[in-house]
Image (cartoon, rainbow, N blue to C red; front, side, top):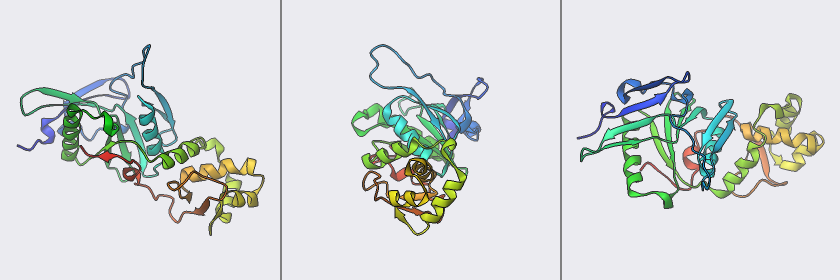
Length: 258
């Protein structure tokens, strides 16, 4: 028998700290991009994974992560202009397996896209997926499908892309933006130019480059971030549409729905 939304139960923590529980079929329309983490991020002596909080320019707030890999994926989501909101550990799903065992799983992230659709993300590299994990990922994917959400199991991102996004993330805050410099940069790069040469046409690179990197983060200017690390001769151009987003599904070298 195919599982429906009514076969999945969920629990989550509202922004005011109140816990709610009920069937997915009833609660799926909750704005999960605004909920509190449904479980804590443990910190203890001898811990082998790194937990922390990443300040998201998209959310203008902090998003939790439980490993460097999760942090990288939060950063990629923050960089994607199609993402308008996200939350870590957004809810706990529970269901009964075919053999009658009650199972549960807390996905790593819930993402809200600009078109209103939802995406649930679990971050796990291929070599760390156990059979029990596969069962939980498949069940979570099935639950998401019943309510029209997408599900993605995200693995290790492309190394070059990730290095470039980490660099640009250092310039993600709006305080870096200088409107007059930004306007001049969009003029200079309208037809494309080398990164450093174009910055030099605007002014002192020390003052101009932070604004340039901010525009690259905002994707108002674009460059090839996958072939090699950003360099002085990287070709930069003005994007025809600064919402060329929705690419997060391709940002991971190992992604699957199960």
